[in-house]
Length: 216
Image (tube, rainbow, N blue to C red; front, side, top):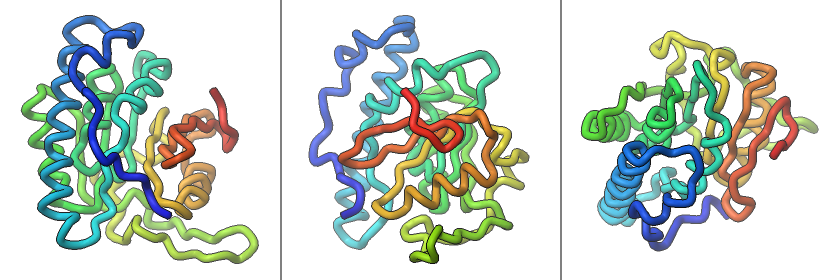
């Protein structure tokens, strides 16, 4: 099993965000418009790209991620998305006040994300490349399968970002089945000790980790 695609979007209009705490009306309206366009982009991508050939991008449950990000907001917090695809989640983080960055291996999706950010007045930064530092090597405990699955390979994006992984307070990833242990190991090896890792794990939902342990 891999990710669980969302067969149909929910009603992502303003009404679905009404019960979220701590959002002013302007931010709520901007987020609703972003989520709505994000679903439109995903539906086109699914039809035009994924029906022709496999691609690892699957749209996340944007509202669920938004709910997880809200209590993590604090002045000066930096957010990083591993595999930012069309940029919706990174832009959401920017709208919530994070200094937000996204790394995506597919350069065409980086351009899509930059265009989406521009249309929604977001300062989110997107770079093309791998979210794996150049010196990182995945060595599973017990000598298991060391393949990195759909994550792919490429030049590390951190030099272009001008920041290392341990510069970020909140890191978000949406692993396919079997990729979560590597993401956990990467965070333990290169992430800040007190940073939070948000993993969107299919049927397991979205979980928050800190120091390698699930919290919240």
